[in-house]
Amino acid sequence: MKKPIDLVTQLTTAIETNSADAQDYYKRGIARFELQDYHGTISDLTKALEIDPMNKWSHLYKGIAKMGIVDYQGAIADMNQAIALSPMFTAAYYSRGLLKMELGQTDGGICDLNKAGELSNSEIHEGFSFNNN
Image (cartoon, rainbow, N blue to C red; front, side, top):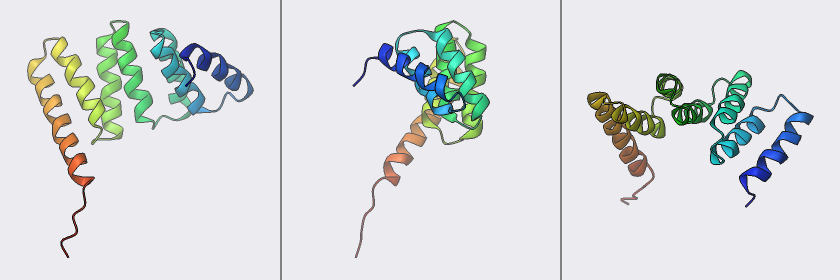
């Protein structure tokens, strides 16, 4: 597995060749996130979303990166967008719930964490198939 810094270099070259590939911006944003380069992450994911605004993961990770720069309202807005795109997005509810708890928004945080738990349980149950023949 490549180191995040090597991925950033490789993906920068790819982006220079084809700047219209949202996945390259997304992948470089995630690599920058692993390097704790939150501003770089936000920049890359913003570009990825300009190309592909329906990518729920780009919205979520952009929100998580905003937590790293203490832009909590921006983080919640991005997580809200991820949930609007995918109302069954467990990771977005979980992340937003943790952030709300951190901000002292206990009721909202508990609600989001409960929703994440419900969705997680339904994902687990949907993964099992029993043949009763």
